[in-house]
Length: 528
Picture 1 (cartoon, rainbow, N blue to C red):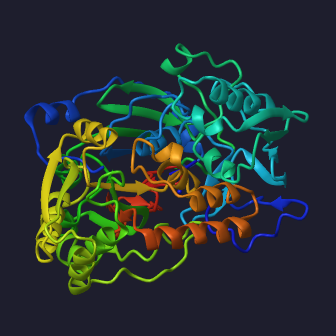
Picture 2 (cartoon, helix red, strand yellow):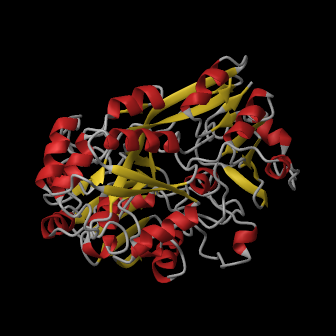
């Protein structure tokens, strides 16, 4: 399945059990008055922290974050949103966590292991309570996993269809059996918050309770979420503040202005051309880290224009990636050396794609496409400098005789065009949630997954994806490396660069971590 199991190639082989315990878009920059008023509007608030308890444990203050993407749900099983993950990870704990160096770590599960290719056992943390005081037990895990599997209306339901059964073994152990190998299960469990068995469908998510470091207070749709410290959180010293408010501010200019004015303390998704302005602002720090996101412009392989791999290779050879990275992204990107970014299981350094316009002309001539025209579809204002990058690419391709029609469309319209197959090249990216490449491969490079996307189909890749779903990390690394080599050669996509995640924070914050997965997590962050 998949969008980010991280480097487990050195883990023990699957004989007899793999022990995995204790491991683990961009917005428009146009500021409108209406959006400014919405972003700055008042929200319902009512602190639920008992100040005496909080301060006795060293908590103080409030952190206000400004996120680029609005949250649409309080249900941890009903989204694949980075923004919602950032917010809800403060309210709900998953079974497993993932560190910023791409390792799985214990959360509500203290340890876990694969007993065989289709059986997993999780040993649960004792002494944990939900915010309403009810205990977290194996019943919570059984309920949460069966709910997401059985309720087809939930966005994450399709991921868990391979679960055959979930059985508890006492109050603090669970065994999960699957219909087929499901090696990416630990990764997916990092994105699924555990619910109490009493959770209903609608009323519960009006005022949800989890086991996380913060309790839910209020949600003003489209504007903000307010959270209060959980004074009885199971991890000592966490959280470090009394309150967290998350404001949703799609326009980068508005987020940056609020940070510079001291109204908020952290913003995500900073664009390269905003970095120097923020760095020059007293009291503001800019942090960046290599992201788990690869930019990927996919071809529509059913189109006669790009069906021939020589044409796709020619397009790739005509693109000067160094110009994109250095001149347009100001160095805030990294050269691509494989479809999977460094840090993820399966990553194999295949070397950078060359820039060779003369070879590109030769391949186009051999393919009988010396007067080629390509439709290049963009989702408007989603990625940094994307229109300028597309225009630069059009000029580069023009040098080898390829005309490019850039269609810069609203996001919904662009996606409709993609589903209909009305494009030659589609500008996109893939943030590898949940830290495993299986979803990416399954979504884009199986016949079923690619039917309405790239139209890619290769029996070799299909077989390797299936073989790579076993829990054994050595096998997965081998199979995924083979997939990458095939894709690198066939070029169903152009991989121009790996993204860099850029954040800006107030210098009043301490212990903030710039994460590779774009999450904004404030569990252990303090404020002066």
